[in-house]
Length: 454
Ligand SMILES: Nc1ncnc2c1ncn2[C@@H]1O[C@H](COP(=O)(O)OP(=O)(O)OP(=O)(O)O)[C@@H](O)[C@H]1O
Ligand SMILES: [Mg+2]
Image (cartoon, rainbow, N blue to C red; front, side, top):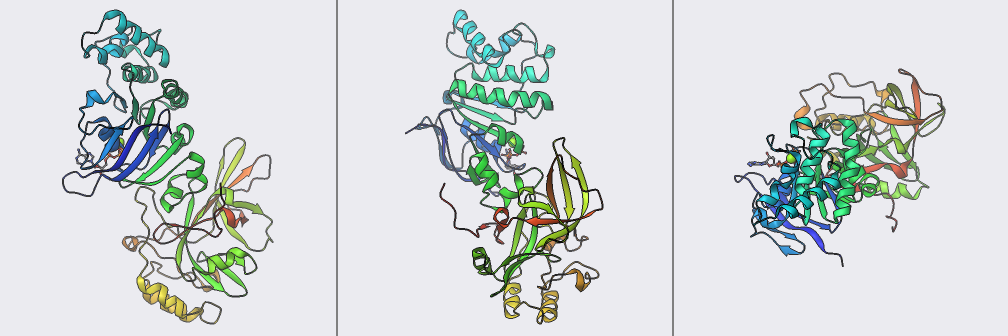
């Protein structure tokens, strides 16, 4: 079995009796493995690195390096290399002296040994021709390389990088991503890399830990995280353009269909489809439908069982075009960083369950819903604009004073060459149900298929 370069067991950090900044985190980074902590601001990424480095003591739990517990060890003895966003090089020292600095504090270093180690580290990051310069004579990318050389000169057992590329410009960032990964593989060390940039996480990581509020929401390879999000937050956080998240209600009409009601439009599964029965089991549940461009395809206007909407944005990306289509409905989240699922009023589900959906019960149902849910519309949309199922998407309780952000948009990809819809066009979009993500009110994935063995 491979050794764990870095292991966390039940690591928790509470500052000042408040909510935990890090909450029971378990994580293993194998030798030579590159693990990215990805998450919004304040989710505890830096705190985890500081605990691993020994700069911060965990409130509970343990850290292991090379399978040895290090909780009692001071920073210096842990032999981990750190590079932070606000790395500071000593301005009055040359590049060589900056890189050598960590070695000077070790007992009786010999100059020849120091010089050899400095050159070795400088070569690994490609700054060996800059050794005599001062930091002020370097570009941002070069400075970051020097910071990395300084971090690795002590031959660390583990590498900790906290958003090291956020202060360098875009072109250099792309170049350094590959180099950092290559460097850690050359050194064969386990790496924990912090970022809130999903592209960085996707391109660099062997595995990604998506974090939220001090916890790991999901840990997996970039492709697992992208194509099989286990929770709503992960689907919301990963994907460019952003995954469209719309409130919906589930209805069953036995013998006919199972329906995902988006309020003004619906996605229907014929009863003959085996997935319809699985969906029907959630009858009356309020859920979130996650739609990525891969699940959608522009089709002819007459196509049955498709969504319609107005093109509200067209973005040309060279080989493809991203088209944003307003399909109505209500987005579940307004922003990922504060992504919270709306509370489902407990009475809602039961009340709806009593009224079997269908054309007859609609008015009564609508009334019941209107009573239960103080929806934010000044004037309700005309009945003709609604589905026959009567679902009224609700807002997060705290946003009821604000005007509703109606207009759930979905993104559709058009591979060129192909006709590109224009702004204001009404287009028809078919949905591939297998590629739709469904999440319950707790944010857990609802699966319509029995998961395939990988
Ligand atoms: N020294 C401290 N004292 C009190 N609270 C702290 C301290 N350091 C961090 N926190 C809190 O702990 C939580 C996690 O902070 P942390 O710096 O780990 O987040 P992060 O994921 O690195 O965020 P960012 O992406 O903004 O760097 C935050 O709510 C933060 O306010
Ligand atoms: Mg941070």
